[in-house]
Length: 613
Image (tube, rainbow, N blue to C red):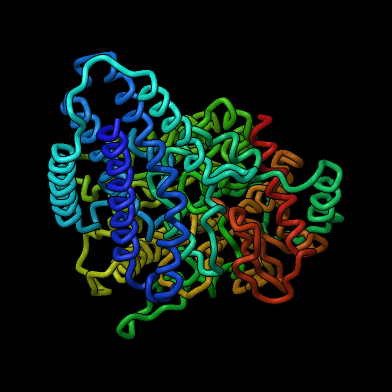
């Protein structure tokens, strides 16, 4: 019995050591964030994270404890082979999770969870997203680390494996059963009432330090196993009556609308919505080497109706598309368009305009099947869908498909011949990872920030030329072009997470009643649906989460969310609330608990609406 207990103890401790090095890999992979957090916070993340490491280890050792018990009855389990096989499979899985987590954190801003499983269904898109990473060195580290760990396990298993023993003794079985049952204590994180969760290991006002304390393997498995239960519990803040009172006040308006478009003319007004991949408001103010990142957009701002304070609802394209076209808020985890049973209940701007005899083309140089976007578009009446399959092989000049320059030419061709009026949508792709461009580099640098800014510069140039060509078309004088980002981007860093969700919106075209105007009050990308449809006197009440930016009596606010957090912005304040830590982690202006209540209310209402669809 002593041999078996020693084996289990050392096996447990060895996993704790492995998770210690896994955390070391995570903090080493993000040196800037580690330096910002400070040595003390990073050191404490190892201390506080030990509790979650112990929980993850207890889960991993439970099958080994059971095998050890069964080895008393089954001779085959009284040798080292089944333990080697189990250890290798678990090591392989853990190594993949740990390295993927470290590589993706900078782009995602949260520890790896089961969201990645959605993207694995599209391996080409996954490769396109990560190909800008140092894949060779990551693979080399993976192989070296796995080989080293396997050698360590193999050697240790040989040294501490128990002496072969056939038959059993009641005391041995009893003790091993007690040891196995006792694993519930580290699994739960202790004897406290609440079981282990992320907030158990949160300890700092620095988010990266808190995230460093989280065990990647534990987080991934828990998100997959208990996703719905955790979300429903975590996202419930108040009762229905209080939610109704708070949200009703947010949407209170008298319907006094400014008319921004000439929609009362005999000639119907065309609409083209250009959804710019990762278009962050931060970029329009940046110069690199004396060169503006978005010189054409900055010039076009003077020619149209520019909204300077718009916030994206979420942080993924699959969230931004329904936010823009359906006025439906982003979910903190996943997207409603990944569930056709729910997304089919949404109204789309394209579908609404189609009911009024508009043509509704959709343009995208990639594969709209990604994240189930195509199902959502078809339900919304988009026809035709011009996608990757619509372009010649020679035009496949991006890992995602056809670059924006190629697609821009196709958009112009189609709009010249398509039946008017039209409601067209174009989703760009060149400013998505891996930030490659088909033209010579203008903004140089091998770091992610400069590559990203260079890709924005390329799309800006494409759109500048595209608008120039649009102005020569007969339909320009009775058309409005809306340029808006699908979401923001973490780069370039400003030190404020809320800035990552800010995305410009610009209306252009001959259908505008006035130009050179700037709308400075706060709004959300989900407000486009109601604002645009109201200009045409369409779709009243069909976008319940969207408000009319042209209503002079409407309140000015925007809400956004991400994994385990939510944001709320008004003209005088800005805050970010961490749901796991249960506190405000970023604030600007007049922020208090009272300011937080409407943010929680709209968030809970949105999530309950999603669950009830």
